[in-house]
Length: 278
Image (cartoon, rainbow, N blue to C red; front, side, top):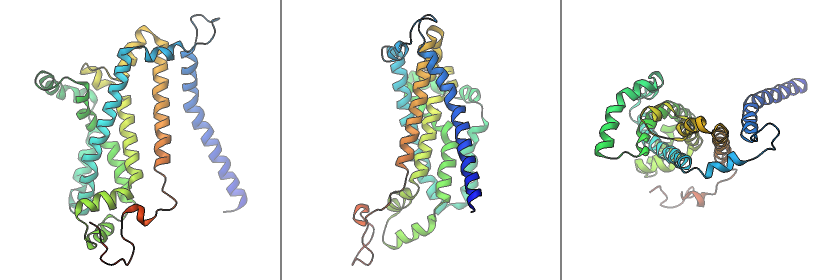
């Protein structure tokens, strides 16, 4: 690449970064400015709205409930999709299209339709099993399937799954070892991306929780906005900052290591006598 072309490309990247940064940061800055306003226009700036977040029991309970739902949904998504997608890719390739269709189907179903079908089920669950808000994890698992599936599919497509599985099997590994110690570490970035998308969907969901009469973070923000707009805006900014920090943490966690020692992986050295995966 010529020097002039490289310079133009660099300028283009910087311009795009600045435009996108302004697109996202200007509204967040305006929200933060609104949440720190005083009672009157001449009053000094204050952080009372931010301090009120921890002093509102209902709001704290909604935040904890949404975080719990995010964790449960992410774990359920991984337990359901990761082994299923790996097994389909290894042994049941003819089911790939059917699985993709089923996982992407929730994108075409409006939330109000899901609620209409799930309302009787949740009414029965509330009366006979449990009325905890954490039961929403079952619905949210359906909502995150399209996004998590595409992220995991990209990770699987980037590696030669069959060759890795055959090599591990030839060394004596069983199928659980193949999945957990051979394939999953090679798609760790895809798994982190799927978890991030799942957390983002759960923290931003409003319609289903509201129609099923549960109070999660977004419902609490909407209810609080009717009584105290500055506090609701402060909570919204805090949730956005939390998602951003989580994204940064996952992006650093997903970077490949510069060097991995064989003794750290637990795998035998090449040519070691009697070596094999167990």
